[in-house]
Image (tube, rainbow, N blue to C red; front, side, top):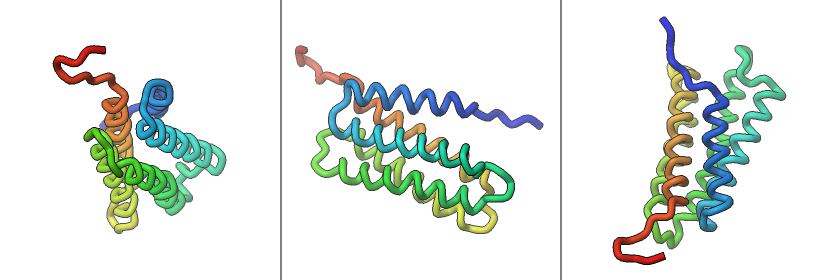
Length: 145
């Protein structure tokens, strides 16, 4: 049986591209959320590469790594929700909360690292897509540039 998996370079490329786009064209909320997400993903990848946390001998490190990456993103998202004028910030915060909840559920016996990692990728893509929606130059009907 073969399971389809998205190669890590696609995940990192998508997150990196949206982060650069948000830093270039986004407002301060999009810049803060995407920068925090990009930094946490880059730091997590560096930690895994340096200490090989994907190895078979360190599942507890993988669980704590998820919390270490996702809690700062949730804090930044919740700070950006304050007086937000658009709904994409709420969506980003919701995906960040789902990411932290998934990381906490990894401590439950019976939850496999595959399930935890797969859900984490889905929530990260949702959060970055919400940031992409926030950066997109939406204009109300009848408005001129």
